[in-house]
Amino acid sequence: MITLNNLSKSYGARTLFEGINLTLNRGIKSGLVGPNGAGKSTLFSIILGLEESTSGSVQIKKNIHIGYLPQEAAFKSKTSVLSEAVKGDTAIKNLVKEKKQMEDQGKAGSEHYGDILHNLEFRGYFELEHKAKKILTGLGFTEKTLKQPVSELSGGWQMRVLLARLLTCHYDILLLDEPMNHLDLSAAIWFKDYLLSFSGTFIMISHDKDFLDQVTNHILVLENQVITKIKGNYKNYQKIQDEKATHLLKQSTEQEKKRKQLQQFIYRFHGQPNKASQVRAKKRIIEKMKGINVPMRRRESIRNFTFPTTTKSGHQVVNLEKIFKSYGDIEVYKNFYFEIIQGEKAVLVGENGAGKSTLLKILAGAIDTDSGKRTLGHNVSIGYFSQRRMEVLDSNNTVFEEVYRSASGDNTATDRIRTILSLFLFTGDDIEKKVTVLSGGEKSRLILAKLLINPPNLLLLDEPTTHLDIDAIEALVRALKAYQGTLVFISHDIHFVRSIANTVFDVKSGRVRKFPGNFDYYWEKIKSGDLDKPINSSKNKSKFKLSKSKNKKKPIPEKVVINLKKHNFKTAKAIKTLRKEKEKLELEDYSKTRSLSNRQNFHNDQTSQVYHKRLTEIKTRLKEIGEEIIKLKSSFIQ
Image 1: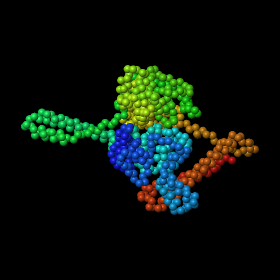
Image 2 (image 1 turned 45 degrees about the vertical axis):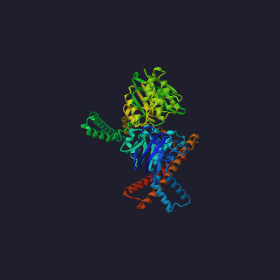
Image 3 (image 1 turned 180 degrees about the vertical axis):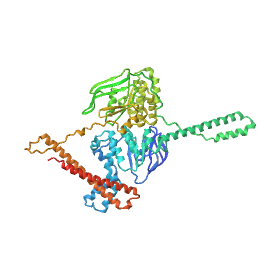
Image 4 (image 1 turned 90 degrees about the vertical axis):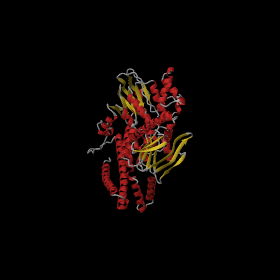
């Protein structure tokens, strides 16, 4: 579908990649990996024509429809979430427009109108809304938010709408740039399960090893200015790389050993005439030796580091009592109790907006509560890593000044600061950079460096892996596994959570439930339905009944009249919705029946069986709709 021919990209003297040749075929499910700054997002931009290459070309087959999810995007759309999710396919939009024009012209009985219906059926138009609802629900949207204008959503939720649109509509290939960044852990796991059964083609930039292992069948590695295509998942790529490096290192060692032996012979006998021919032969052997290039180690973004041993805290690290916290009219926590015990490495899980970051900020003392008591345990010192990096960084400082400030102005700490900064690849002039000009990944590394200069015994980390590449995340995982203090964190990175958490707190509707075990234990509980079902306040909605009286009718109170009108309005609205659904199903029934009548439309019996099954489902649903409409009509109150 897509071919890259001798593709190169440079910015001045800096070369991202050079002479790339690559073919991307239908059916590939590929992870694109490489160090931060290697040019992964730039490669996507060049394929899409958003940016020019320095040299080379990109060939895309005719009529190939590419869907693209950038790292960040903003919507100005005032349409609802559901409407936005189903409007991504240009071909469908054009067919729907033509269909409406023919209906307005009274040509709905023509053969061309039937062809339009067939094309819409082929492109999945009649199942589009149902499919979109399932995907949006999986990504965390509720029935209420499906009707909400996209422009009213936060940036993260808008990105979920864009992702839903890409999954709902037909694209030949999807280019997904860090799709997990705006998902909470539950949505990330749903997305992983969705991609497992996804029959399409995608290339995805991701730094989550577990995610890549489960959903990909190829890995594209962009590093050292070249790209390598490897069949299999990320684990297979690592295995191949390790075996290759071991083999080449062994060959290189043996070659070097042989070279030294030959050189020793030449040095020993070069002055002896009777050995002259042998010496010449040994020299020729050395000249013909081809150097064995052992692949460079992947460019690190964080070197291996450990958190220094710190003072042990008391058994109870933080205790919250009778906490009330609201943002305007939105109540997040009410009469809330919570505690963290020494040695716990706890992950907070729950939907976006459930209150995870708020809870972390309350624990850190970064925000005030409306009321209640927060008590720190004995000898507790806190290190807080905010999801909004600039909340814990001063943009006016240089890199060195920012860490120096954490050292409490200790003049003897200068060498130690430089050593720590070098672990996070801040060396030379880098330490004089202003915080304001740092990239997202550099800001994350700087905050981690600050935590090392005065190591706390309680770490509170909000999405610490964002903007870090795979190697950096691995370095952080190793450090946190060895960390002797207490840890509470939020992360959407499945590998990171599985590697570290020994306790899970499920945050939902202002309540928190504790699971003393790792994430896999918690997830098994979720899947098996062992969690208590949430209280559904909608079940307690009032039902109005009007009984007939043989006596003289009494005036109905105004409040009851208003409620009756509301009931009738809702009933009428429900009937209208059902009639619209009925109309769509009847149209789909006509289209599928027409397609089945033409055997040339089917290359195998399997497709025909699917159509017959769907027609049976439509007939069943049409009968149900008829019964529901009759029932609703009878519920009207006069």
